[in-house]
Image: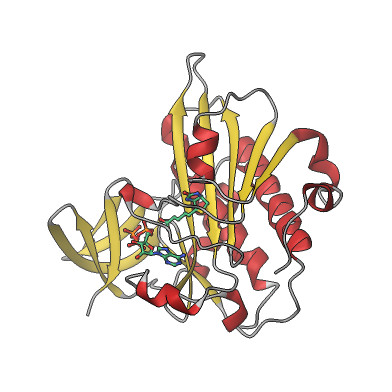
Amino acid sequence: MSLLEQEDVLKLIDKHLSDIELEIFPNIDSTNSYLFHQPLDEKIKICIADEQTAGRGRRGKNWYSPAGSNLYMSFAHRLHIEASALSGLSLAVGITLAETLQEYCQDKIQVKWPNDLLVNGKKLSGILVEIKNETDDSYKIITGIGVNVSMPEKAIDMIDQPFISLEQCHPLREISRSRFVAHIIRNVLDAMTEFKNNGFDSFFQKWNQMDAWYGQPVVIKIGKNKILGMHTGIDSTGALLLEQDGEIKRYSSGEVSLRRAC
Ligand code: ATP
Ligand code: BTN
């Protein structure tokens, strides 16, 4: 992909242009960490980097982020809602991102609860939502998106689970970096507006159809504990539903990891 110019992206943002501030860096530790420490006014801040030296996944895991290959982008915005209502945001962004990326490739993109996009069981993208409690009863929400577009071969030594790049998913068109990024920004901003106004409702209906492991036996890990059950989808807040011994139990993301049962 060609390198990204701020002006090229901004001219493709359309109706959201006056709502955002965009910064693009050749490299940074983590776009999420950067925005976490930036002051925030009413505008949505967006940070993109060509490379991250300390990219992060959930619970302190690394997100391998070499230069010139992939997309590393974060959004920071302010929300005045109950913390409990935030749980679906990561899933709403995941659905939106899956639908957007699907326009670029033939292979089916699926979601894995709570924050991954998979193609043929391999990880294409991850989403990291972080929340900072502000002094005025609002929350600063940082939503980070990593998409593998064209991973270098050496990545195989750096990532300890199956992964895939968009260019391996039978691409439908050549990716212009600025168009690709602007497309994702527009759709994620639309999704955030929908989430702010109407919560998780309109996303909830879509999740089960896109879920890679819906109806299959899975294991959830909570710390050292492992629980086996049947994945029966999510509830209207975005919590995972697991059938165990004929009973449906719900789990919210937090410290929970979902794995396919062997
Ligand atoms: P869970 O969130 O259910 O615990 P997970 O193990 O995939 O799932 P995440 O925090 O979602 O954990 O993602 C971080 C993990 O993703 C890393 O531990 C690594 O295995 C993998 N990973 C790191 N960089 C990449 C990348 N660029 N592309 C795909 N996978 C990556
Ligand atoms: C995950 O699968 O755990 C989430 C990975 C999120 C990676 C993105 S890349 C841009 C942003 N900055 C980070 O440090 N992480 C997110």
